[in-house]
Image (cartoon, rainbow, N blue to C red; front, side, top):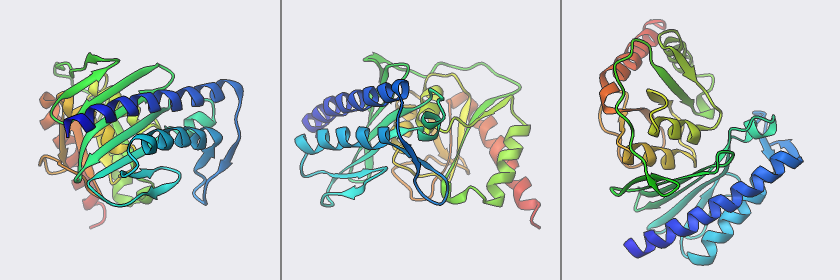
Length: 272
């Protein structure tokens, strides 16, 4: 697998940077935008052009690999290899002129994410994570720094589209917001995973949100030295269609677990 992974990293990095350059140029020059569906979610020409670049790059070198992309869905024959692509993570930010968006590409082998590439487009930073081989930013090793104790945490929140009106999620979110220094919702999840891997926030709580942008971020955090666990504190491994995840530095494990579990008890109690 190593030669494939080495080549896949090269192709993914090149494709992410090329797709990001297209998005960055359109962001500065102007672009077309439309509503994608009844939810009001947006689609821009940058999404489509960036996706074409990435899929073409992968298909040219790995014609037998399956690809699942944000806009075009699933293509190719099912096998050991699956590419997961979000060509413009943060479309809504992009559409309203907020420069917080990126590219996410993940390679999965037999249901195990083995390569994650995130391109922070406006910062021109490429993050690469490889299963059990570490993480890097612009080819320099990335390790999550140790965080001293803090009375009030800064926590990222990621919530799936399908559960936006879930009552338990809303109450958990309110609990986290009321009991932390700040709760972040960037509308660009990959950039939140980047912030965690860099030690800029204390943790992330993810409530049932499995998208094409998820596993590059999880892999980056894990390979940078972070913990990935479920709401019970058990290690989160592989993939899950309905993930409930806490991610944090090892020294924040108990504080993050307590925050989420108290919030879940509060949410459950309100319905009794």
